[in-house]
Image 1 (tube, rainbow, N blue to C red):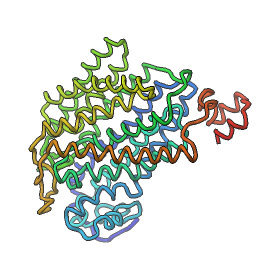
Image 2: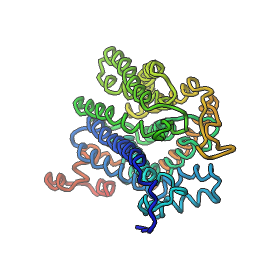
Image 3: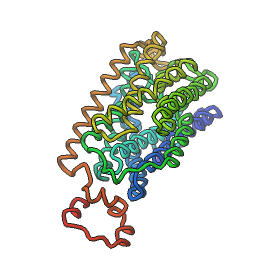
Image 4: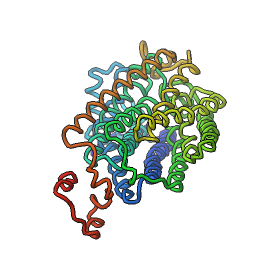
Length: 452
């Protein structure tokens, strides 16, 4: 820990602590998402995979989050150094905000507020990125549920959380990012989270193949509980996807003028629109899963526009989400791709969300940073449908290219999928000794080689 003798009172004012508490709640909301995903996944696996499902979920999440702590926030913060004309902006950001940098190891009151404004809040926002990356790691585990090797899962979680998510947020999520500063708009993370994991899940579903029929299950109680926990978590972290300026106002992450109250209403209108449409599909198809996931699909359909849309617009947009989800699920079934959650719920609705943001928000002032001038002046840019399309293209290229390279590399080296023996017997038996010893299993040399 770096100790400096001078104290800067502005860093520990009452207003600073209001912002601190606001973002702490957002961080905990993001982390609660992992609990929700664990329950949802636990509701779709056979009991013999249950313990390993929860164990892998936790490990994947912390690997993703820890990887991001090394330099993830520094990569995202790069855009602000560019906005203020700091020499060698990336190098300086890495020096300041990597895990062993001064801004990560000095108490906020000892950091000069002229060079590190709102230091306490920025340090807490580092944890927001930790939780963001942990959620992505948790999603990576869900992509190969019940059949992906733990080693493959952990490698993908580390790369996604520690490198690719920070790069994607630098490009698409922030007021001075290269795309946002030219009119691209996102609020929650349609590009860097939902579209990204949707593409990766599509690739992994293709390369892994479907699970064995005998290993799948559906526990509606656990699945439904996970969906409800997710709906509790979402409002908490969504509000953290913006800038709270006490005495000034609330702004979306791209510095669009907004309001906490309207954003909060919009979240629940999105839940409502998705829930009603989901219920219609559920009763027609006799599948309660659409009631559980309908509000989530509705929410994702509005993730890019919560800060710029009216409540009625969010309701209408969200009502289309479950239908897009249903179409995605039908396509996955048609092509025998084993993923009825991430790809259908995340990919189509997130693409629709950013397109709708380009329509609803067309011409809205955005981008830039307060105090910057010229190309980075506050709200100098305007949201456009064309930039939204460019953002989709960039995301699909980065997510698709990185996913294909990593998945094929893992497949050709350590292997992607566990042996059929392990999958059939259950990962709990193979990966956790207390079960394996208690059952006194006899295993073949080949199975042991696959296991190890």
